[in-house]
Each structure stands twice: as C-alpha cells, then as structure tokens.
Length: 424
Image: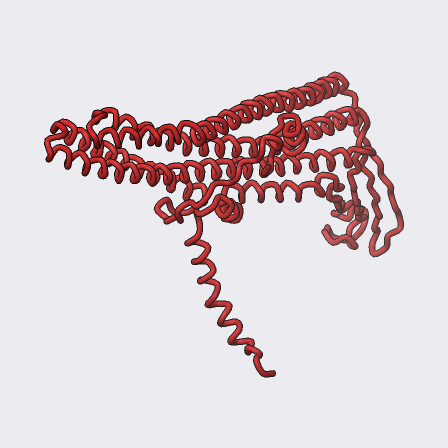
C-alpha cells in the first residue's frame, strides 16, 4: 500500500525517538513542580520500596486464612516379622502391617476468617504507610521547588538592583566630577555595589543548594542540571481553604489516619481471635491399614486441644482489649495533631497572602514613587545621597517581601496538601 511505513523502518524510528523524548523530558525538568512530581513518582526509591511492601502485605492475606498443610504419616509395624519365617524388612508389603495416616488440622469455626480479616487490615496499614511516604515526598518536592523558585527570583532581583546601583553610580560620578557631590557619595555607591555582588554570590550558592536538594528528592545525581523555574502553582481561593471543609477531607483522605484506622481493625480482629481461642481447635485423620498387599482396615481419628489454661487466656484477652484501646487513642492523638497543623497552616497562608497583597498594592508603589522623587531630588541637589540609597533599599525590600510571601504561601499549601492527602 502506498504511503505505508514498513514495520522494520517503523521500529527503527521508535528506537531513535525514545532517547530524544527522554532528553526532552530531562531538559524541561524543573520548569514546573508538576513535572517534578511526575518524575519522582516513577523513580523515587523510598516510595517504590513502600509500595512494594504494601503489595507484599497484600499477598499475605490469602495464606492467613488458609488451612495448614496436611500431614502424611507412615508407620511400619513388626518390621522384624516376629512370629513368621520372613526376615526383617522395611517394605510396606513385607512387614507385619503398615498404617498410613493423613492428618489435617482444622481451627475452630471463625478463626480463619478473623486471621484473614486481620491480614487484610495489615495490608491496609502497609498501603497507608506507602501513601504517607508519597504525600511526605510530594510535600518535600513542592517545598524545595518553592525555595528553588524564590532563590531564582531573588537572584534576578539582585541583578536588577546591581544595574540600578550602577545607574546611580553614573549619576554620582557625574555630579562628583562637576563638584556637585562629595567624594563620599561616590565611595558609598561603590561599597553598596560590592555588598550587592557579595549578596549575589550567597544567593547563587543557595540556588545551588536548592537544586541539589531537588535532585536528591528526584533520586538524581546532585549535580544534574535543572531547567529554570517558570511559575509557581496558583494559590486556591480563600473559599477553598475553609477549615471545616478541609477537616472533612483530612479525616477521610489523610494516609496516616487511614493507617491508624487499619491498625484499629487489626487490634479488633486480634481481640476477637483472642476470645475465640476459648474454643478448641481440631485435628482429623484417616488411616488405612495395609497387611501384605491388601488394605483391609480403616481408622478414623479426631482430636482437639482442651482450653484449660483460662487465666492465661484471660490475660491474652485483656492484652488484646488494651491494644485496641491504644490503637483508638493513637488515632485520636494523630487527628488532633493533624488538625492543629491544618489550622496553623491556614492561618499562615492567609497571613502570607495579606503580606503579598500589601507589598504589591501599597508598599512597592510607594517605594517606587519615593525612589523616583529621591533620584530627581539628588540630581538637582535637593536630596542627599543617603536618602537616595535608602529609597533604593525600600524598593528592594518590597520586592523581596513579595517573593518571600509567595514562597511562604507555597510552603503552607504544600503542608496543607500533605495533611489532607491530596491536591486542593
């Protein structure tokens, strides 16, 4: 058929395209936090280990409720052939008699179901631990990305300030050359520029550390490159950050509470099993008897244990009750702490939101107007250099406040999502 790519050629194209797609993914890694989360979910070794442990725990459910393996016993009787002319022998057909016994242990009714239910709850505990591991890893990645983004923006801001200081230095040098400004102004602006360059070096080092932390969370070599961060996640509206609504989501979705609830079920099933141990377990067996080459007799055997050690069982029952109460208390303590953390983070994100709004709508415009007025006044000799420098610092501080408030909101949002067990 015309226009159809032959199968070998198509396979070759796919093989060649795979590395290209992988390189494209690696080169874009770091632009957004969503890409980092998707990358980590596939490759994070700690989460992979917990997920595999949860799968292993699920495989323990069926064996927990299965019957134990039966036992086959063979007894050779009168192997010396006493009373006959035959010589001693170990072959079943050449001894006085051979007894074959097939034995099966059978727990009392309901015990297998309780063991299976306890194993299912243990599997849910392991699944909850795996979910908790991922939510914590995701929160760390979100936090590290917010810091990575903030440092990148602060580096850009510092470079802008250095450019602004160099512009001021040009004005100062011109005024000093014309005898309109003292030499002290020219020296102070050079000191300020040096201080800003020193701060830039510190920020670049922090940028390196933030990139290393992100790479460690992604299970990549710490020196691996990351793309420049492009944007932060949008902060949900205040209506979506309602404490009552988030409390319901926390109680229903938090993996730690899910694991605690599963532990309660484990304790309850073990408690019920302890009470069920008041009743005996059985062992049944059937035995054909071989004499020579013929089976001419059959025996049936039933045995059971006698639960006489009542004081020991009562202690086990009380232990099981205490463990159940402890599991419930542990869940209640976890819920109280998680709700306290939720309330704290909601207050923190609201405060950071107001700081950002105040800085953007009030502090930054006022600082820019002050700087423009101070710059114009300095050029005409109506304002001294200290006033101009202070105005420049106010602009820088206002912009830094905006960046830090945005990063703080991202940190609080990451912690809230860790608490509720899902993205908002």
